Amino acid sequence: MQNQFKNLTNLICLMILLFFCLASVLFLSNVILGEDHPDLVRAPFSKTFLKYVEDKKAGEIGMLYTASGHSLGLTPHPFDISYTNLITPDFKASLPANYNLRNENKLTPIRNQGQCGSCWAFATMGALESSFKPLQERDFSEQHLIRNHGFQGDPCEGGNFYQAIAYLARWAGPMDESDIPYTYTSYDARSEVQKHVQNVIFIPPRSGPKNNVLIKEAVMEYGAVSTSLFFDDSCYNPAHFAYYNKEIKEGPHAVAIVGWRDGFSKNRFLDIPPGNGAFIVRNSWGENWGEAGYFYVSYYDSYFASRDLSAVFRKAEPKVNYSDKYQYDFKGMTMPVGYPPSMVAWMANIFEARSDSNLKAVSFYAMGSTNRATIYVYTNVETGKPISGTLFLKKTIYFYSPGYYTVRFKQIPIKQYEKFSVVVRLNTGGWEYPIPTEMPIEDYTENVKAGRGQSFISYDGKHWSDIVKHFKNTNVCLKAFTK
View 1: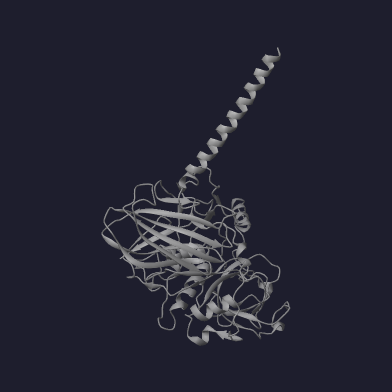
View 2 (view 1 turned 180 degrees about the vertical axis):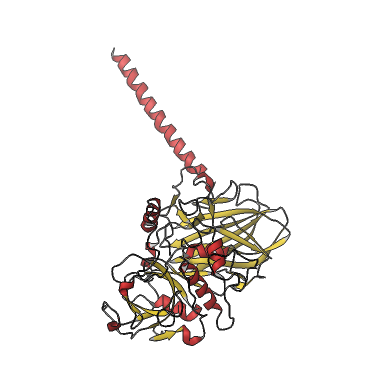
């Protein structure tokens, strides 16, 4: 009996030993084969966006007009960007106490959006037009943007700056106002794209009334800055065209910053803020509103340029800069993804060349406070293997603010029907979701489609996975340009 018990004990010990050995082998195999990798997750949803979707389902569209009957129209985007409040600007002492683009011939005439939720389109085009002044006088079509933004929603239901940037980045516009004038009811006429937008700089939300340096520098260097606020008539003093809102969250509206006055008296506002100072802001309610279409927003406004990224356009390029573009992300970045807590990730697209040409540039979003991007280009790649074939380029570049960027390099010849890949390693300081993606989002981009063999992701640049295995109908936002 004792021997039988001893033999049973030995057998149990042997089985336990074998179990741990097998578990160790499986663990090591997973590590070696790259199967034991961190989870790919998407960025947090914006609470504002989730509420917006819920309200629409309930038939509550939200505030479309002010009490005085002026149209609004700014809608939220899906992902949360509150992390950008962590950015600390590099303060410069050379900024003037007063600056006004109206005195610099850097603004086009004031427009009127009428009874349509198109403020976002006017803020976008006003900023883009300003970037060309005074050397070029341009007037781009807001009508074409609101009818061809490509997202869900009717032309006058509203939109946001990310939708506008996606439209511009895929070269759907801008069109000339003279070809497609603004009426918000007429059909589009035939027109040609006038410029290629290749770079958009995002300015982080203000963290307080004194956190204005980045906005001021952008206005002086690039022109008008498109931004957002909550507008309510009860916060506006028409006697001094002065606006200060410290608590009302209704009425999302898009406008453009065109200057500032540090000494603008706090006593000009209906509700007196803690201190002096105001931004000069361009509106889209016609010249008969405000100071010939402009007004002043207190530095102490609780929501102005403080709840979302603002945007400024570096001068768009002539449309002959490139002859063709390769892309899968027609609606741009709808949801970043990554491998938290790491701020490093890899993304890649495999394209098939449509003709003999020269690859000259790539573009992507980089959403960190500081960004380090290393770009690789492979030619003659195999299907589904983004780092196969011949490595033709490796280039590292830094971006010191969030944005949409184009990176140029020495031309790379590609042959018709040849598969080539663009690979980017992104380190987005301050942001755990480095990979910008276009994916289906309820009531936003439900009709997005993607196929296998297009976009790939990796946590280490060695072990790659097709992104549609993780998220259906998803592509990375990574374009290539040829000449």
